[in-house]
Image 1 (cartoon, rainbow, N blue to C red):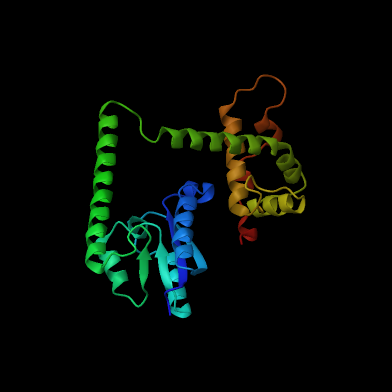
Image 2 (cartoon, rainbow, N blue to C red; image 1 turned 45 degrees about the horizontal axis):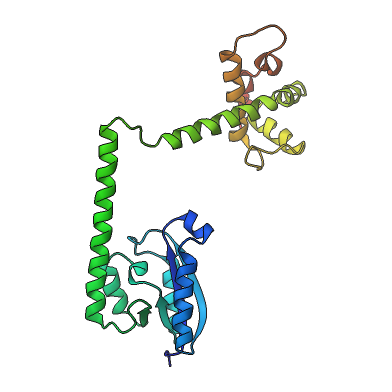
Amino acid sequence: MTENRFIAYYRVSTDRQGRSGLGLEAQREAVRSYVAQRSGDVLEEFTEVETGKRSDRPKLAAALAACRQQKAMLVIAKLDRLARNMAFVANLMEGRADFVAVDMPNADKFTIHIFAALAEEEGRRISQRTKAALAAAKARGVVLGRAGAILAQRNRDAAQARADSLAGTISAIRSEGARTYRDIAQELNARGVSTPMGRQWHAGSAQRLCNRLQGAETAQPHHGGVSTGEECAVHLADLLPHPSRRA
């Protein structure tokens, strides 16, 4: 019997909401209250983090599979948490697993179809309003995506700073006989030096490092002393593998 056995399914729209629990605790509280009123048990909980417009949700598929295996009913807090897509809800209702929405526990299939259609229309209107607002902002001269550009520049600056900090190490490795990007990568790994992402070096990442150092050499003026580029003497032509040593 499925009356007292439940599989809970929760959905939040963004990674940030998923990490912070925003909206998630409210769903859990609604589900727990509903199940407690029926002296039931929540056997498992599944949480999906993505948009409601998609229908290929692995957590929901897993929840439905658990319902069939454990002869339980799928319980959700609100119908629009299931999907803002009437066709998706219709297909789900025709499946082999029963489900109930806490905000409409006594609704029949016809009522659920109506509410699903309203939720789908609400999602469509939200999308239209968002597009219109972005278009109006662009018409006013607002630069869209500026935060992403700023973050990208910060990442580039951090990568250049990391490359500059390794200039002396690269110079020493080359003086010891390293002639290819692979040689440099292997020696950096042997010395316990990791990439900016904390990973092992390979020929490609060593090449990007050398490219950054060469860029610093050609772009920065010399103000006495030894510049990063001069100290490393990193020239890509010198670092290209000799034909007899190509991998």
